[in-house]
Structures are given as structure tokens and as C-alpha cells.
Length: 278
Image 1 (tube, one colour):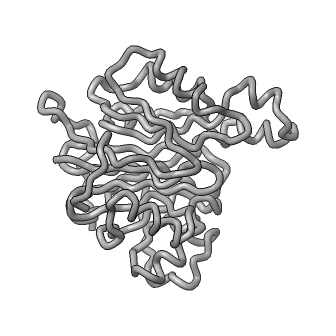
Image 2: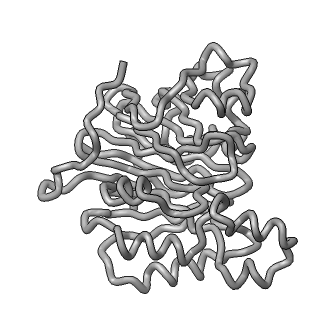
């Protein structure tokens, strides 16, 4: 079975990631305006009616800006942890919110979404793995440092959105005040290019077909720098930069027959091609 993925936007100006099959899909975060989300979905040939849920990673505005308007218009359920819901508010759409718990998979049609905690300066931040059958896609951004759970899930992904937020030299020599530099690189901020590359080199599964490098800093990174770093590693994985200015293409992700065995826990819950069939 295939999953279809796209970044609608990735950066401090808004984050929204689309993962779905031919019948249903989910957003991980909704940090663009409703109007801009609709425009980018239409350009990709993707239909909003297929989006059956929004999963919220944490309460920062670049991840939740569009949630209230999207939900008010399309009546989409929002899955959010209790602490994040308290911080985010969502008062107008409380009746559409549902809680998730780390490690307990949520089923949305044939999709299975598993959350796990991450290190970031938010009240209760989570990363997600979206699965269908034996195909797994991870959304791993806004992470201060790698941890055992990140490694565990990264090793199982056929595709991943992975943060490569900043170049260490650019951050050090840049104009940010010291306290902000400390926050970014202090273990609860963001992954640097080096940290992301180390994770990729050490733990990339040989069946990973696509890596979308995400949440690049406008001031402390350059897309061409990140692309050059990762393309210097001889693998068959296609490396893509998720832009902070426009949507990516839609990519089809499928588990190869020789790698159908999965390590994801079985938990019972209570393109390079633009596709027009959506």
C-alpha cells in the first residue's frame, strides 16, 4: 500500500504536512492560514474533503495558526494532548478536539498515527509516525536533540520529514542575541544540520526512499548548504528540501516487498510526480 506525502510549508512562518492514502489523509500541524492551505492543496491536486484529522505537535503559533478556521469550515477533528490543548486554547472548536496519548495509535480509516514525546521548549511536544499497513512516514521537526524514541521510529520510516534547522557556524556568527542562540541549540530548541546528518548516517534504514529536510531557518541556514551536505552521502534515498515559501510536490511512498516486516508496536486503539487523482 502507498502513502502520499507533501509539505504545504515548513519553517517558522508556518508548518503543515500532508500524509494520506487514496481515500483519507491527515495534516500534522496547521500553521498556515485556511486560505493559503486551500490554495496550496488545490495547486497540488489534493482535496480538502480527504483530510479527516489534524494532529497537533505543540502549541507554538507556526504550528496552529490555521487550526480554528480550518476546523470551523471543514469540521475536521483535531487530535491534541491535554496540556497542549490547555495552552493552545481552541475555545471555539473545543467540541472537535480529541486527546491522544503517547504510544497509543489513533486509527483514521486505514491510517494509523502514533505519537511519541520529543524535546522542545513547549508544554507537551510530540512527534508522529503515520502508517498504513507496512508503510511508515515520520514527522520529526522542532526537536532539541535526538533521543532513543526518535532513533527507534526513524529506523522504521520509508520516508520522513526531518528537521535541519540551522548551520552551527551561521548561528554562532549571526545577529541573534546570545539568549536566543542558547535556546535554539540548548537541547530543547532545534536540530542543527550536523545533528540531523548524524541521525541520518547512523540510523537511516536502507529502505528509506524519501527524506524531506524541514524547518530550515531563514537566518541561520541555506537550502543549498543542507542539500549539498546530505547529497554528499552515497545513499539511494532521495533528499528534498521542504521550502518555507511554497509547497513541495506530492510524493508516493510504498514499502518494498523485501522490507515488509515492521518493528512498529501493534497497539489496538479504543512524486517526484504530481497526482491529479486526489
